Image (cartoon, rainbow, N blue to C red; front, side, top):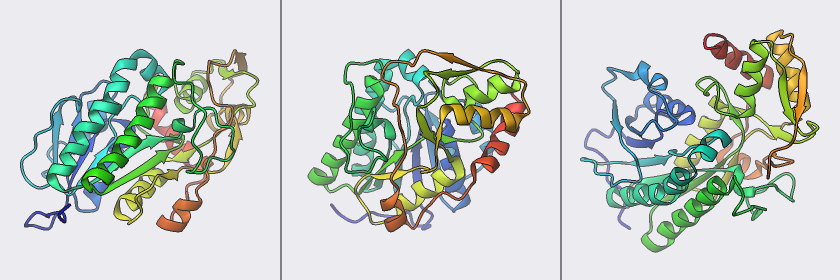
Length: 320
């Protein structure tokens, strides 16, 4: 594949799909801060204009409202394609299972086609969900996963697994420069209050002094990475020379019961903890092995949980 062509101004152009989402909007901010011209694409199925409203009038940001499963036609050079479009929370992909499968398959196909046409480098936002309910702990990139293909979470898990396969096929068949990031639990401002993920669920319940809902006995574990750390790791991956999947996340592991108690303390809430049955196929353990990120990207998370929660709670206080 011929080398990428850059614009005459030498200002790199990045295309970000899912630009109005939680992660896509933070990525857009980072790229603009680092001198990129950004073309954001979103159909607002789960994104919101509020996440990019502050960019109105920014001459280096252009927004296109479009479903990325449709043909993408863009004038001019493109240097980087960042494919973040997808429902990404259980509430979303249970409500939109077919759209989730389509954006992971057709959407990835269209964005890879754009990267190939423009000779751009491509990054796929994959997920720790490709490991399913893991039988290996912590999860290294070499682990193939334990996924129920026909379960309620299969639409998301399999969409991302297919997207990874398609990304590598374009690399091998067409020589597209590709990167794959496997994103573990991330939190921070711009998360949606009712998106079903544990951080906004616990914080919104705590701020309203309502019972905090813990599933099962609360012994299942997660690890939480603050959004600025995650986006920095993803940026380093795109700019690196490493082409295989890389885990980005925080290896500090908490049980859901411990996390609920920490949220109550951080918010000063009067909430009590209540227990409900564990959802089907809910992973019992989730923790990234970030050896590759440390080695190839010189990256590790820096924001302590207490600091990240302060910023996140501050954001949610204005919206509860």
